Image 1 (spheres, one colour):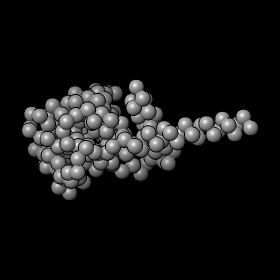
Image 2 (cartoon, rainbow, N blue to C red):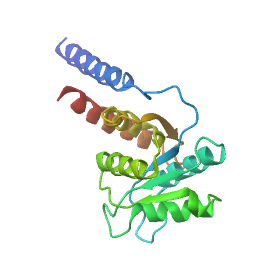
Image 3 (cartoon, helix red, strand yellow):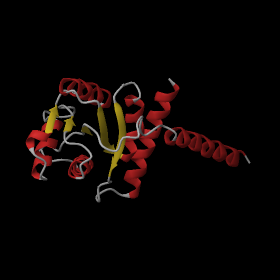
Image 4 (cartoon, rainbow, N blue to C red):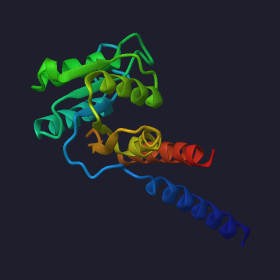
Amino acid sequence: MKLIAAVFKVVVAAGVLYANYCAIPTSNTKLTHFDMLIVLGQPPKPDGTLAPELRERVLEGVREYKAGVAAHAIMTGGPTHNNLVEAHAMKVFAEAQGVPAEAIVEEGQAMNTIQNIYFSEKLMEEHGWKSAEVVSSRSHLPRTALILEHYHFAWRTHASRWPAEFSAADVATHFRREAKACWILTRS
């Protein structure tokens, strides 16, 4: 009986955690076209190529750019885990996919998601941009939205695809880690 009670408590706690995670807003606007895209970074591989999850984020940004969602894109991320600037590797890859260099702005200072949004907003102000679609991995977007709620520009989040290399367990791990982070942020 004690085992059943313990399992029940774990299931209820997981359900509350998941409900909290799913209740986070995905936008503060009904806009469908934006001044720009913000594509959130992640460390590239040591050889400068994009890791699978980052590759999918940039490819989604490229798809959104080509679909006319925005005329500009900020690739954001600094040298977080190695000496390679995420934004630069992302820009090189986006250009190779057909996005013109003049449509891409590199934000190479950010060391985390809070800074991605902070420094991107500064670039938006410099260019007079007032709205953004923010592209990242599906599991990362609720935490990103919690950060975006502190800013006054119009925004919505947009999920990239999962890399084909990811297993179901990889995806579950990402969601579990992000749901926990969102719980901490919404309860602190």
